[in-house]
Image 1 (cartoon, rainbow, N blue to C red):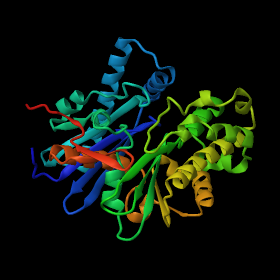
Image 2 (image 1 turned 135 degrees about the vertical axis):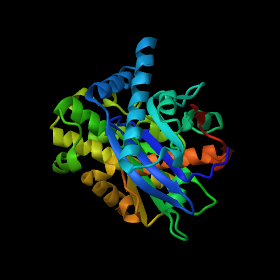
Image 3 (image 1 turned 45 degrees about the vertical axis):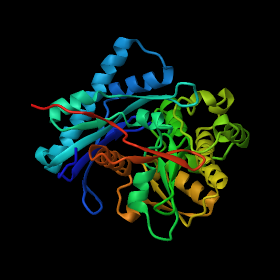
Length: 367
């Protein structure tokens, strides 16, 4: 199904589940971002997603309805991006959507990753091929379903003779080690924003710690930090993936949660930063720069801690010409390009071994 069209759209909602990011890219000699748009979830829908993730139980009826609601949200977000950017439907090769991850379990006999957000709704309303369900083929081919972005990071950030880490900080933090065009390494490394944001919502009635300003005023509670860093996730081998099934408020002691909010947030910020340091040290990744993207890149306190701990320059992806909020949705657009044009991606299976395969399912409606 090789295509002459060069416009691809990627839409994704991450573990923070606060919005759908849409990137419209053009792929010729290189990847160019043409337009970026963010579509906020309604408060009601965000609460439904939170409950689904937090309580891990639902009726089939509720799950089916939520699948359709999220599918409609993706469709609306993409349609608005197309309208605002004045992109012609006839110029679009495909749309790739992440869906909303509500469960990600890898360390079980039957590993799976569950995303909801019906792609049929997008395909029927926009009449463009839709690529979805990237993670489960990734798992079937020996990967962990996350992160999906290392090869894309290599595509856009590679510079000859310059090794760098591309750190994406969302609800979960992951990074890619970009060294050359032959090797490939990427893994989830820790909680990113997940714990800090959850604490802010539940105990402070704010969505997040803006710029990390509260954490910057606090003092790290070392006893809690030590306990957190001793979690089993950090003892497992790389590459690995994780989610809010592990990194949620239940892993924090009740005593700790009653402490001064600035001290709690300072501890959680330090925990996220230490998670990055541990991954770098265990994998012996020596770099000059850490390039940061994702919503967590706006947390100045967290970036300061990462820079101080790693003794490394921390730069925003904007420095390289890539909107820090757009990189991940751009990656899904690029994955759609690869799948539609029958181009396999490299899948890291552990111990420096790789498989190659076509990742993503195609849904198409013709009128």
